[in-house]
Every structure is written in C-alpha cells, then in structure tokens.
Amino acid sequence: MQIDLILDTRAPADELAELGQLAEAQGVRGVWVSSLLDSRDPFTNLSVLARATTKLLLGPVAVNPFDMHPVRIAAAFLTLNELAGGRARLVVGGGGEALQSLAIEPKRRVRAVAECVEIIRAAATGQQVDYSGELYSAHRLQLNWLEAPVPPVFVAASQSQMLRMAARVADGVMLSDMPVAMTGQAISELDTALAAHGKSRPAFDTNAFTAWHVYADQDQARREARQWLLLRGIFRPWLLAHFLEPDDVELVMNNQAAFVEAFRAGSPDVAGVPDRVLDALVDHVTICAGLEDLDAMVDKLRAYEHAGLGAI
Image (cartoon, rainbow, N blue to C red; front, side, top):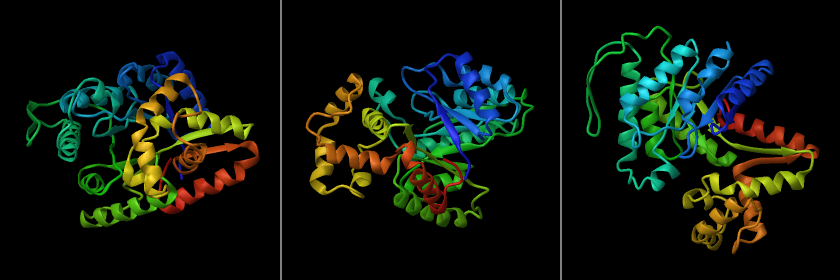
C-alpha cells in the first residue's frame, strides 16, 4: 500500500514546495492539497511544487462542480498537469462545507459529479468536446495546447450510488474517514461495479482520506485528534451507526454546533458529548497513536491494505 500526504493549501506555495520536496526525498508517492473555502486556490498553489519536483504525484482534493464549472476545473487541472509533466491528479466530490457558506444547494450530486468527470476526461484527450449532459454542457471545446499525458481523475465516494458511478466514469476513488470494516465493505461493492464495466483493481486506484495524529505522547495525539473531529466527516448517521449506539448517534448529530465551537476554540472537549463518545470517534475514524503504539498503528494500516486500499 502506498502512502500519500495531504497538505493544507492555506500554506503559501513556497512552503508547499518545501514540504513536497521533503516528501519526495523520503519516497512518498504523492501529495494532495485540501480545497477549502478559506484556502488559497489549490491549482495555482501547487504550481511551484510542480516545478520543484520530478516524481511526486500531486493534485487537489476535492473540487466540486457546484462552485466551479467542469470546463474551468478541466482547464485548471490540465494546466497543472502540464506544469508537473503529467504528474497531476484530481479528486472530484459532491461539495462540502464551502457550499453551505455560499448558500449553494447541491442537487443530484451523483449525476453532477459524473458529468464533471466525463467533461474533464474528454477535455484531457485534446480532441474537440461536444457534450450535452442533463446538468452541464460543453461545446466546441478543444484544448489544443495539451502535451502532457492524460492524468487520472478520482471520485470522492463512500456510499453505493457514488461508488457505482465512479466505477463507470473515473480512474479511481477516494474514500473518507471510514473504519477498516466499512472500508472493506465499500471496496467489495466497488469491485462488483468495476467488474460490470470490465475494470478491476489495482489498475483502478483505491485511496482513502484518513487523519493521522502521531506524537511521542499518546495523550497529545488524542487531544489533537479530538480537536479536529469536526473535519472528519462524522456527521453521517450511517457511518456512526457502525460503531455507536443509536442514542450516541443522535447525541453526535444533535451537537454539531458544539463540535464547531470546540474546533474554533482548539479544544479537545465538546460540550454535551461525553469522553467515551469522543474517544470512540477518534478510535474509528482516525489513526491516532503515541510512539509506544506504533506497532498497533502499522497493524491498522495493514488492515486497511487487506481491506483493499491501494493507498492511504
């Protein structure tokens, strides 16, 4: 299983380049940068890193077709790919916290992401694109300046419809903040969908967005993991039900505002949510360890690999 890193694209381009060069020197396969409402533009911010490295794969995770038209995503992505000499990659998702802040109501997420991926992949061939979808269109589009190899496009997927669609239109998937057992279930479902389209792993890439919190002191690691729970995609009842009792699922869902306040305050404590629930969240949706627990962390990584992940 390969290891990728996700960097915070709120950092300046020169800092990303420095971190990326260090990652490349240590044999890391690639880096992703987050695409957040308050971040620097992820495509532009990777341009220095693209020029400063020679092997490192790189790209944004995750952009969406609701706040950026697929044609504009394609142009930005393929420009980055040119700068990187064919090493760019991209994750397209159904939108996150940015859409709430922009008061955008995403409709027909699966269809929107599918059409976005189809437009990007068509544009990447350099041939003229005449695409008429149910949600998006692109006509007389031809990027005749393309020279780099066609880059892969991933779909951010966790549930059945998005997984099946990704198997049909994409080059890979990126799961998000899922326990090992649920990861295995998702990849099993993905395998069935891939077979229906004459595809299979590992040619079809399987990756997972997973938070790492590793310090010499386990307590410090756990405190940090709890501080960042807001960003772990925990407000998904179907996921929480896998490891929490129904009353605790309801407790988490009813205290979303408290998680926001804890995150803003940098606090490991969430008002109204007991430690046992917070610790269960950390244990199931993050990789959290002190130095004395490194063997257990490696075992967890191997469990993810056994579940079918090609990278994490």
